[in-house]
Length: 126
Image 1 (cartoon, one colour):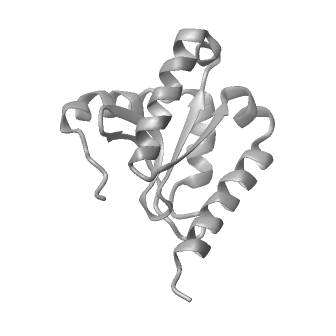
Image 2 (tube, one colour):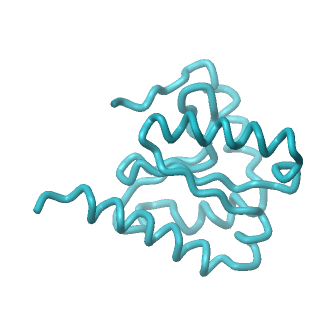
Image 3 (cartoon, one colour):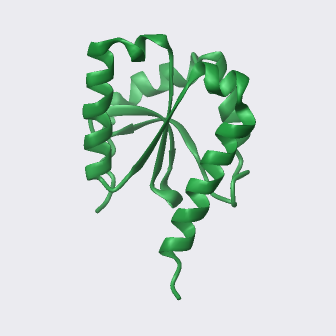
């Protein structure tokens, strides 16, 4: 199933790319330019009704970097719904807090790498 690109979010996506959080900037420096198994990542990508923080089409992967507001009940419920919609598009969603990215970057990168590797292993012909 093709991933629906939402052109209505193009301007918002551009604004978010120009105003990334410090944690998003750190993670972007580690995933850009095909640094993970040669796969392309995009930042602030409009998908369906959302703008996701990072998207890797080659691994069907979305990465979200969440600030503290995401732990509030209303935000957490919205995030759960968002993840459910994205997973219905056959996308894997990984969520990390800003703190995890800033303080445990090696662990975050290991999880991303393993998720990408597993996807590639499962999708390669025998």
